[in-house]
Image (cartoon, rainbow, N blue to C red; front, side, top):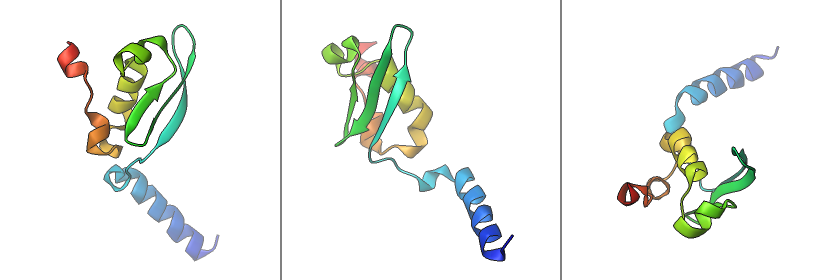
Length: 87
C-alpha cells in the first residue's frame, strides 16, 4: 500500500475517535419505527418526522432518539426540544 494511503487511513481512524470535529448541518434518515417507517431528519435548523405524533408536537421518539445518538455532533440548537417542558 502506498504510504500516502496509509497516512489517510490513520488520519481517518483518528478523526473517527474525535467526534467533536463533526457537526451535522442537515441529515435525513429512514427510521424504522414499531408501527411504520418514517422520514426523519434535521434541515434549516429544524427537526422533521413523517410520523403523526410529530405533526402535533413538533417532536417525537424518532427525533429524540437521533438527538441522543448524535448529541456530540449536532449544533446546540438541534439539541433543544420542547420535551423537557412536556414531561
